[in-house]
Image (cartoon, rainbow, N blue to C red):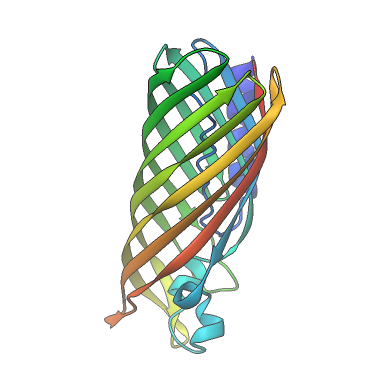
Length: 242
């Protein structure tokens, strides 16, 4: 019943999500223990900087591709993870209108009161881009590889630091010159991530920050809209372990 409830909650969060592509990793300092389940609830934000800011600010009247597809903002987030074996877990996250699946592997460096490990993952994701102020709609697919060093101290405090790299493809019909026209774009993203968790036994509060560089190669009705810049993705939440 807990698993069914978790899936229902994730689907519900997906229907409530906004447009921002804010997907945190919420790695934690270690994998979910074997045959245990983690359920996290919270939110995330996307803060584009420089040339990645909304084109309504930088380029009035131009294509609204980035305004619709890569907007800033805050979205609800929920995730679930299950410990499959001693060194593997599986997870599913819904953040705004994006759904990400993941498989993670852990290499333990130190056991004891202070536990240290390296965690690497594979995370395909996809989602939809709902209409935002009649700017257009579409979809996205991508693949991410996170890699972190994590430490867990006495089951109370966790910290993780590492990097996230991903590639993404976005497509849809977006406004340009007053009419919707087909557009597509490919993007690359890489940058560091750091986070921490504090709690007791089965309940922890988590905060995390990703600072990534993005570059997009976009074609909208024959117009090149290639852009690059930095984006911040803070995330926060409460994790329950069953």
